[in-house]
Image (cartoon, rainbow over all chains, first blue to last red; front, side):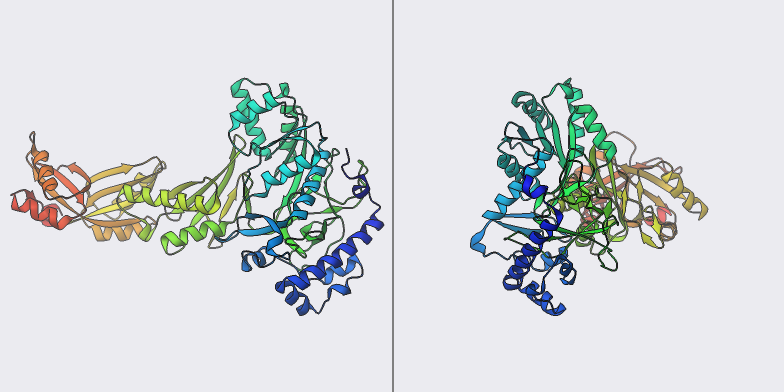
Length: 430
Length: 140
């Protein structure tokens, strides 16, 4: 089902007229309301009124995650504080989160965009949608929730975790669509098997999976174990949250809602735009947001774009499944983790940065993060109690900063592999 | 006062052999040895003939090692021998971090090594009560 036929199947020429108009309005809005953008535009010698076509996007300044942090908490908001009705935040590279604000209109639009994604998965007002993304500052839970309600579906706001209860409600409430991280979905399949519940006996028809990187092999496994359609959903809080882009039933790339988000692919080194089909860093300009519109926001996600009309009839450009990152960010159980956050904790505790390594693996479809710290100098004590306290403190402090459970191991000096004299910080075995 | 060698060991096969090998190659004799272990890691503790040299050699070989001040008491090898010492330490309000016993071939009494928070207070109390404390000369 196509939620918004007029927009989603719009002729691309017509679409570009609409986008140009929205882009100019957005540029005017940020130029007038956000000193950061006024300065950035002025430095490049561009004025919002110079925008005559989409090609003029290239002359506009970039925005990066640290710009949000430098203007923490609300410095990049375009809307007046009285018009902001909701805040969300994601973890940043230091202790301060990245904060985004939404006006009532933004919340409504976000719901509509997310409803498109549920419609991709076959959802309609008869659907029963179980939202197993975390509710809270993370955009996943509430983003999916408002989308499910906008669709008119029956919405189950169960949030993440509590697996046995998730399964019970799926059985008792007749859930037809689930929104979860793909690794959690596979974890639920295992739990069902332990409980003697056949995943195929559920009324489940489809799942909307995202908030972490996953492979085609995982998609096939989920589809086979549950007998459902598994679609990939993409989003990031800086741009909106879930619902920025989503697979359709063809599963041949994620349609970006281009009437709201203008995508570009750039070379992350030269920052030059690349043509359709080329792999590079995905950059978004939000062209219909009031709370915190962003100009040319660098997502750091590596992908490519395809503007051919899809078999499903939609004309909206498709992005390939995200292939990687142009920075060192990790996504663990849907949470963004930067090695520098862990390093910061170790610096605070040890006074100097000890050698450490982050090892990520996936056991029983559950991401596990282990931090190995070399015990040297002042970190060492001949008393077990003090070393255990050290280990527990590192663990607790990292958990506080990241908001997820981690395992901390103390290791002997020089056991962490050095390449070119520099320690390899991250080993991702997923 | 006696210096005890402490070395951090990961809970991995062959690590203790590596440490004792490094000490053996440097001609350092181990007099007493104790291992504290957790699920993750262990601490090897021991008395060696030349503690300063042992620490340096181990550090050169990439281990984390340190010296801690401990004391060793000699108690008669009979029921109540240790109990008496522990009672004195309790009276002096001394907390014990850990202790372990070892033997010397030429000595028929039991030797007990103590690591405590207040070593000066502990030693003073034991001396007042006539407990025999070993000196560095007795051991090295």
